[in-house]
Amino acid sequence: MKKILIAAVALTLTAVLQVGAVPVNVSTVSGYNIGNGGGEFNINPVIGVGYAASVLVNNGFETFCLARDISIVVPGSYDATVNANGLYTQTAGGATKILSKGTAYLYSQFATGVLATYRYGATSGGTASLRAQDAYELQLAIWTLEGEYSYGGGALDLAGNVFVNAAANTYGGGLAGLAAALAANTPGGSNVGALGLTYLSGPNIGKAAQPMLVLLPDGGTTLMLMGIGFSSLALVSRKLRA
Image 1 (cartoon, rainbow, N blue to C red):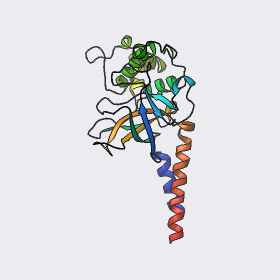
Image 2: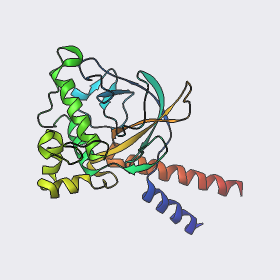
Image 3: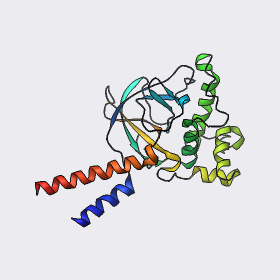
Image 4: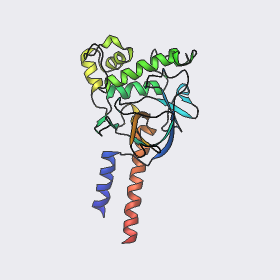
């Protein structure tokens, strides 16, 4: 029994996989989205903790998508699962990837309201607002760091996007800093994980929708403990039946 418990705990600590599925609504907020298929998106209810007031609206939180090859219907209702390791479905065919260190860093800065040059309060002018323009640039930066988009005909131009440049500078600057920003994020790194979304209705019911970014509660510790709790309960149940 002791060996079984140790194995269960080790498995939970290593994987920190999705814990349950939460029904959510995904929409966009006028003045926060330029209408090009990218962020900002609003997810209701709030998942995770530590968001700045500037990214909490309509009982939800603002976020960005990770993959360009997967569609999403907005507004729409979905099942959401958090992967604290940052593992997400990158293509419609099911290929998976761990989000990059640069993406995790940028979203952590955005979600906590301290991302330099991001004009959180400039929402006048509807979808053409300054905030929406910054959202478009940040979305392109995230796609770039996830290998979904590039500047300069395939070569990354650090000067082409202020947020790509910010991510590179965080890890030393220049091409070396960019290489570090492109590397896979460590579990719980920057307190950011991936939010997997699954269609709840319509012709795509049960299929994966566009994955997005989410702040983790306690750097993923809560999710980890929940996973351990579920594993322990399952073991106790088996013991009682035996």
